[in-house]
Image (tube, rainbow, N blue to C red; front, side):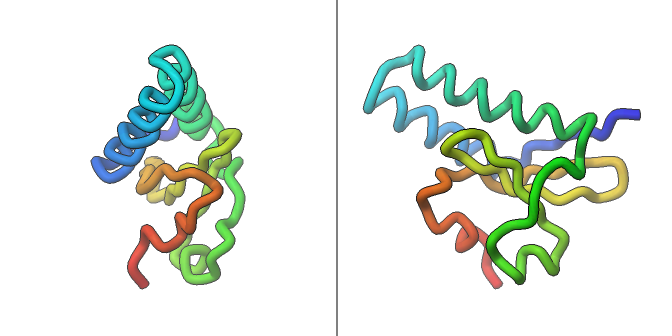
Length: 102
């Protein structure tokens, strides 16, 4: 049985900002490829919700958050029942764990 993946509004906004960056810095094709690659990594969580790894932040790990890495980006998620909630998507070079207040 597949899990339901729900990308929360905060994560959609993150993805839009990432795509906008690549559109400005490179071109539309690159922006599309990056966005598609991230969404493909997230989609795999439908079948393998535990395939992500622990985050570098102890507090996030204690709260049950995990992350899936897609090349230069990371999606932070939590599994609740049969759903995978995507909270944030960020560049791995940023302090993405600070996206959560704790």
